[in-house]
Structures are given as C-alpha cells and as structure tokens.
Amino acid sequence: MKHRVIVFILIVFYSYCGFSQQNTDSDIMTHVASIDQTIDTYYDVLSEDKAVERNWKLFKFLFTKDAQLIPSTKNKDGVYVWRYMSPETYIKSSGLWMYEHGFIEKEINRKVEVFGPIAHVFSTYEAYHSKADTEPFMRGINSIQLLNDGERWWIVNVYWTLETEHNRIPAEYLPKH
Image 1 (cartoon, helix red, strand yellow):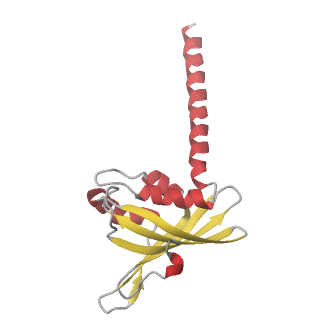
Image 2: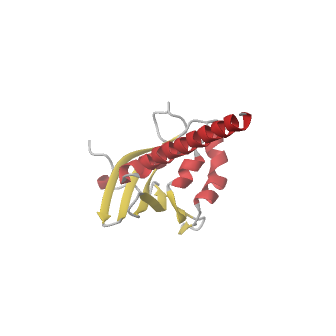
Image 3: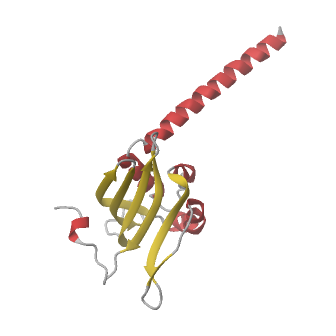
C-alpha cells in the first residue's frame, strides 16, 4: 500500500512538473511570437536599475545559436571599428557594469522591413542609468536582423553605433513630434 501511495505521489508530481514546464514554454514563447514582442523583450531584459539582476536566460533565448552582438565605435585614430560578441560574451563583458551602474535602454523609434522570413529593424534608443532619469547619457541606433523559422522570431544580429557630435541621428530615425 505504501508503495502505491509513493507511486501515485510521484505520478502527480511529474505530471504537475510537465504541466508547469508546458506553461513555462508557452509563456516564454509569447516573448518571441512577433517582431514587436521580440524587440520589446530585448529592451526589457537589458533595462534595469542599478543592483537589479537581468534575466539573462530570457536574453539568451532571444538569439539564434550563432547570433552576434556587434558594437561599432571609433578607435583612437578616429577610424570606425567593430567587434563580434556572442550573447554569452556580451553578458560577461557588460553584465557586471550594467548591474553596478544601472542601464535602461529605451527605444524611441522603430523602422521595420520584412521580406518573407527575414526582418530588419532600425531601432533608435536612448540610454539612462536609472528609470527615474529624465536625460539620457547616450543615444544610438541598433540595427537588428531577425529570422522567423516558422515557429518564432529569432535575433540573428544586433549591430549598433552611438550618436556622437559628428554622427548625429538623422531626423527620419527619431520620433515624429
């Protein structure tokens, strides 16, 4: 009798775990069901005040296996250079800084182009150290390439550059007032 009770409890437990896992999978898939949801989730995951941990698991879920994050900046000689980072490398290189200083990236304009399963999003952003800040400490444009595999949208690359005094964001990529 004791054995049957234990088996019953295990069956109920594993059934519940399976149900919970399905709900979790279903819930997480809502983050990538559309281009808008994928981009919004990207910004939401990165944007937290100081001393608040990001959901890096969800961040990694947004990307294809070989995805790249590609910042471009001017080097000391004034030449634009770039570097490639996997989502994991990005987390290792930026995660602690974001945690210690706060990093809120707010999208202020979006231009989307889609052809079949591919999409390109030019996403203008402002960055703040705190959700309470009213003035950004930087602005830039993320060029985000996505792929829909028939089940969801994946981020393939995020390629970005910052606005500078000599590289102003064009009006067409700013919000219309």
